[in-house]
Amino acid sequence: MNHDVCLTCEGLERYLGEEESRVHALRGVSLTLEAGTVHAVVGPSGCGKSTLLYILGLLDQPDAGSVAIKSEAVSQLPDDELARRRNELIGFIFQFHFLLEDFSAQENVMIPMRRLGRQTDEEMLDRSAQLLDAVGLGAKLKRPSRHLSGGEQQRVAIARALANDPDVILADEPTGNLDTENSNRAFALLQRIVAERGKALLLVTHNPQIASLCDWVHEMQDGRIVDARQRA
Ligand SMILES: Nc1ncnc2c1ncn2[C@@H]1O[C@H](COP(=O)(O)OP(=O)(O)OP(=O)(O)O)[C@@H](O)[C@H]1O
Ligand SMILES: [Mg+2]
Image 1 (tube, rainbow, N blue to C red):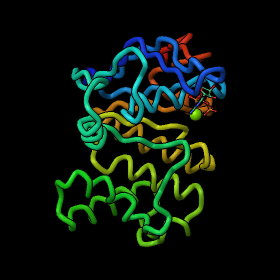
Image 2 (image 1 turned 120 degrees about the horizontal axis):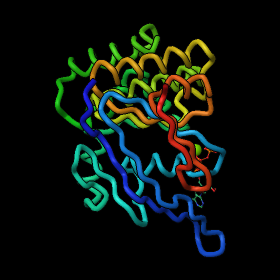
Image 3 (image 1 turned 90 degrees about the horizontal axis):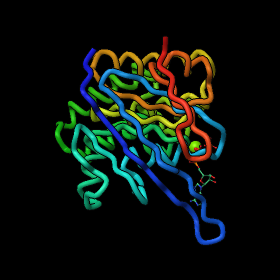
């Protein structure tokens, strides 16, 4: 296994909301994700899991602390540079999938590839078809995503997150809307990509069975990581 560090964060603090309703959502979170490892973040609703993922995914900025991806400090970069790193290095699977509903499954998966602009149309069509096949949607490539079930839409979102072959995959309850079989299948796909291609995966999950299959489980409470256990 490759032990290069993919992503680190140090002392992340985040406040959300205004004045009296201001919430101290992250209170000093530090983490290291090595290439080839799968990490779970668990903890009660409202403890700061999504807030943490958004900051690690360069979708939000911390009030204090830092994020580094492949040893490069990224938290202070200007917005356009952040967007470029995000598109190139990070695959994000949202708690709610945010697909473009009039677009087909395949078009949704091709969006990040178009943004990066490194492949021909034919290459993008091929790669998106392969990714959708891997999540069990090979027969529904052309279907508008609004005509897919919730679980199918979530699988399109997983394929979309993998489109640009990111080094870091961040997933906010990626299997929350899936039945057991599809949930296991989606997790196994992510696990395989991590192991074979030296990626780092951090996923939020409420599923104890999935957490038990991760290399590390980080338990959050009130904006802090209160325990980190490595799988025996
Ligand atoms: N935009 C916002 N304005 C104010 N408070 C917010 C905002 N977004 C989140 N919060 C608060 O910050 C805290 C952390 O929220 P977060 O979404 O990170 O929790 P979570 O652990 O992902 O919960 P869940 O398991 O329900 O998804 C919660 O108390 C939440 O109410
Ligand atoms: Mg959340």
